[in-house]
Amino acid sequence: MNIGNNIKILRKRKGKSQEEMSLELGLNRSTYSGYENNIAQPNLENILKISQYFGLTIEDLISKDFSSFKELDWRLITEQSEARLKGHTLRVLATVVDINRDEVVEVIPEKASAGYAAGFSDPEFFIDFPTLSLPFLSSNKKYRAFPIQGDSMPPVSQGSIVVGEFIQDWTRLKSEIPYILVTKSEGIVFKKVRCNEGTSSLVLISTNLAYAPYELPMSEVLEVWKFVCYVSRTLPDFQPDENGVLTAIQHLQSDVKRLIQQQRDPLN
Image (cartoon, rainbow, N blue to C red; front, side, top):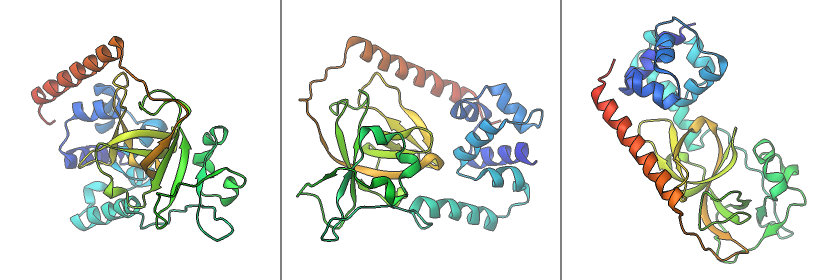
């Protein structure tokens, strides 16, 4: 396999140091260095993690020889990745219509939300699901409603229903805007998004400061829905507690230390 040399070439094309790469991939520095130098081979989990980070398939990462790539080769492999993000490749969206053949807003029941990532492209998955009618929604766009769990996105509370507008072109996502993301490993995720320029990942941010931001590779994403509105049975009443503020400060201090360390450690 060419994986060690391929990883090194990909890292250098991104202008990253080994320290930065190991941090962003959640790996030990010496472990990551061992991969690049062919001292050790990454297991399947880490191969998947690395391929997702660079927006490549596992097959490309382990079977191609990037040292022989010319700029045309890099452009082709980049265009394939961009085509997926822009929705130019097949992206199936099952939908339900009423007796007038008009699309309706399907409400995903809480019990069905766990299986949504597996059944979202199957029209039969949506049979007998409740529907929602909101007169202010555009008839030219597709909407869907999702149940929200947890307390990471106040004022949206546990048990609320969040309505999203279907986004076909993922390259047009806007930073600091809430989105509902349907993912392979985490299911339905409702977060504010920060677009990581120059990378094939997103930073997901909670409005509850007690939850730290984290990265999600675009290869993990199955569907994207832009937040439109939410329906709740409770009146929003959220005040960040002292522990939440303290946790947020600790996250900020950690990020500052990491940035200082990166400035001290030049590219390998």
